[in-house]
Image (cartoon, rainbow, N blue to C red; front, side, top):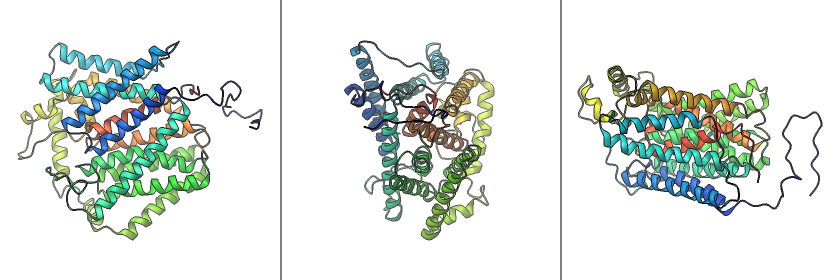
Length: 438
């Protein structure tokens, strides 16, 4: 193996080749944890978004088992290693707030808060495990490659189901809801939310210098199909969020004076537009024409009404909220319009957070997001040549897309999407930590 030389004036981090044995492999516990996290996160979208009780049980049990596995690994080590990050503080305080809602009976419906607390504990466990496991560069790359292939496979299935649909999920499972099915999800907007989280990964890798050009072309093709499937899903929120992601990446590249990468991003957008123009799906064209009259269908008008009604809920319990998970229970008392449909969510993740956890919970999540972006943005300078920096950049863009979509939908109330968001946010929040290479 030849000696790697670097310029004396270069500020790029050099690999400590002599201090880290090249033959040192990952610990079996570590391998099982990385594989377990990836497989558990992939399970959610395939199980209809993990919205049914059995799927939620699998998600919670799986997270608990992985946490126990991590604990067993630490016990078996001569010197346990726990990485602590500033972002843990607001998450811990948020957990204490939910605990106070339960202990002091501050929730309007104790059981709903208890069941949602268990689910949020699973999200917290996945966030913690991702922060511990994906600090190592090779594991972060495994995560990125796995979810690029996974996202490509789900998008390919979704497009095939779009053009050969019989109205059933997987062509087998009947759709008993009023939502518009796309891919393995009952609601097309939630499918779009999944792709918003995943598509930045192949986009960033395709524009970097991490792999050979033919491999980058494969990643670019995966990004093209995944991005096209967002538009084919006909989710307006998904289209807007994806456009924001592209805009954020373009601004980032301009600020880093990477004009040639801007042209690559523009080429990807052009290829996406051409592929959609050639396909000319009638449903997408109709959906785009409806954007000129967004209130015509009444759906958007109802969402605005729900948000307005929610303001009254916030006024009555402004500090600690009504209790985690209680929105659908309390909302009928504040509803200002008639409908025979069950309003299960606020259709705005931020408003629902305010309703259920009050100003305290909302403020803690804002601090969590601030620390996540603060840490992530400090570690993306060398994204074209450093794998972890590239993956952190993709994670930040993916989180941004889902948060933008959350202004008009409730992707973070879907367990599959919320779990993946937790893991991706953990990668972003721990981006400025020294990489683990041993």
